[in-house]
Length: 125
Image (cartoon, one colour):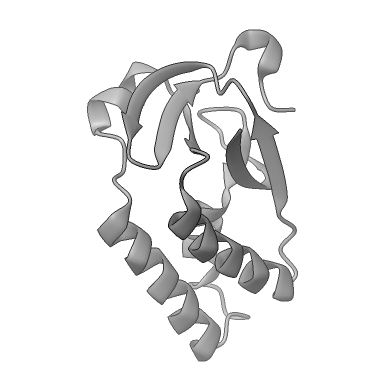
């Protein structure tokens, strides 16, 4: 089972709900984000920057509709993700958890994630 964590806002490129990493990065720049929360989010995002590779630009350019999913074996990454989910929810940002057995056409795969184009009939609503 692949997992994706999203908010209700839509990404203009993929047309799918925005992922929580982009939302978290934007939130720390807002006035209502206190210094302690910003530092906590920064630490989580820094862990991801060190341990989870961003799909190379050429794959992101192949299809603007492609989105990232956690693989089932991403247990340590998911611990950090649940921590980030809690911080966002505590600050009034709703987070949805999307599950699928088939993330679509995989363009890139690495360690604990896949970057895939959802099938037309399976586009996230």
